[in-house]
Length: 171
Image (tube, rainbow, N blue to C red; front, side, top):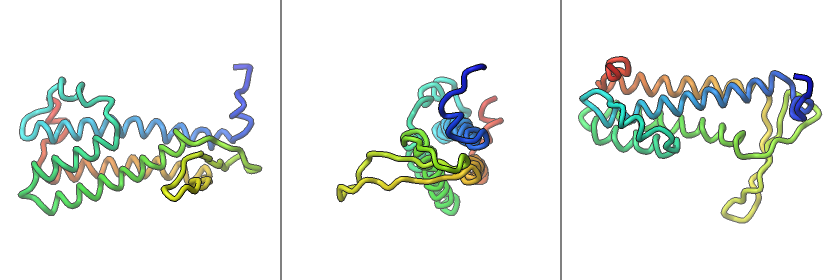
């Protein structure tokens, strides 16, 4: 490519890479959450394709809420697992809130090409603007790694609660 995009002049390659990594991991995490919800819906049977198809594209917040609701309903005899699953879904929601900052806020350059300021015109309930958020390359990468790990932990918690493993559910 001959022409550089303006963003390539504003930010370092590492920063751009870290943001891209966050979005790739978030996309995979969204698909994993679809499969986790499909597991809960199908339990104790196997996942079926129409269920997965119907859930694909569902907002992440809705997927997480439905996982929490079904975990309470399907796993009520294993209450120690349910509490851990509910907490893990909340942690995943927090991770997606960070991803949403990058998706919905305007990016502003700083004097340091490895830092980014995210600006929005969203308002709080009291009428004040939501303050700008500043991130550096290392933080963004850590958010991506944390999101991936949180989704993996949810999978393990569902395994521990007695749901069929995904590889078994898909057969």
